[in-house]
Every structure is written in structure tokens, then in C-alpha cells.
Length: 214
Ligand code: B16
Ligand code: MG
Image (tube, rainbow, N blue to C red):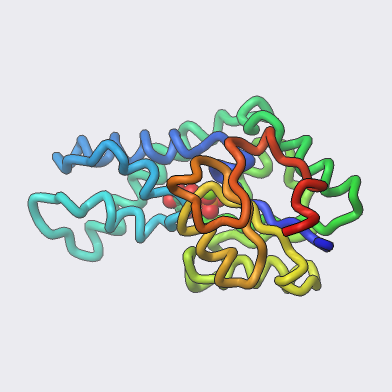
């Protein structure tokens, strides 16, 4: 039924959601901006610029473009400090096996990540060579929930979107997959990812055969 699987990176393959959130919290504390408890969920799958907009929602004053640029760069510095030390141990449990099972079934494998740090992360995790095609935020104009990134992944594989299965941990990502005309598997809670065709608690529960009827 499916000819390819397109994986998201942060929160599906790499254990980075908490690292992104911690870096934003460090920045917010430094500039006295309060953050809601659920901010981590809202930042998932959202690119750096849009994440900053969310982080600054409760800011006591406005920040101009140059300041915003500097704040985003500062957050990225905090994030990179931690990512530089990443290794294969920071793969989410079951991620390597999930990718391997797709390869064993003879399907194409692509990555669709909103992160401009995706190439670095793939190297650190030791999985850069497992993908037939990689699309990261450096290569697209419209971020999730726009379908552009998943459509680019399908095009790079030479597979019709309707023959692709997309895997995402973010609501914005599931929306992107659906808008691209793919079937969506959510990784996380049904409450957050209810628009997906199927929801798994983690990538460790991934079983390609179970999706044949989607
Ligand atoms: P960067 P994904 C996304 O990656 C993260 O989920 C999101 O929290 C982050 O803000 C975004 O990448 C941008 O990351 O600042 O490294 O460019 O889930 O699409 O792989
Ligand atoms: Mg993600």
C-alpha cells in the first residue's frame, strides 16, 4: 500500500523536544518573559521565528526585528551547546529500529524537519546515511502546518504523496502531513494529535504492517 515513509526528526527520532524547551525557557528567564506550563507542546514542529513569536506573547515590551534576530540566535546558541554533545544514545528508543523496518520492507525513507539544525543532529545521532532524501528548514519557504516540507520530501523520493506515510509528534506537523495528502501517524497523545489517522504513544510502538489498511 505505502511506497515511502516520511519521518519528522525532533520528537520522533531525536530526543530534543525538552532541549528546545529548556533553551527557550533560559532565554525567556533572561528577558523576564513569563511562559505558560504548556509552552513546550506549542513549540513542537514550529520553526524558530514562529517559536520566538509564541515565546514573546507575554513580553512586557515590544522587540524590534534586530532584537528578535539576536534573541533567536541566542536561543539557538543554547540549543547548539547541548546538541553538540549528542550521540546515538540520544535517539528515541525504537527510532533506529523503525527506520530499519521501513528499509527492510523496501520502502523509500525521507526526513522532513522544521529544524535548521537537522543536518548537524543527523550527524551527531549517526543516522545521516539512513535516509534517501532529507528536507530541512533551510530548503523550504513555508513552515509546518503548510504542506510544503512534506510535499518536498515526497517529490525528492519520486513518490506520490498519497503513497506516503508521514510520522509526526506535533499538531502543526500532523496538519502539514494531512494538507500534503498523506496518511498521518501521530507520536504522542490522542488529545493533541487527534487529527492523525493513527496515534502511537512513542516511535517504539511503530509497526509498518499495522498501517496497511489506512
Ligand atoms: P531550529 P521538527 C522542529 O523540528 C522542532 O520540533 C521545533 O520545536 C523547533 O522550533 C524547530 O524544529 C526549529 O528548530 O531552531 O533548530 O531551526 O520537529 O520539525 O524536526
Ligand atoms: Mg517534531
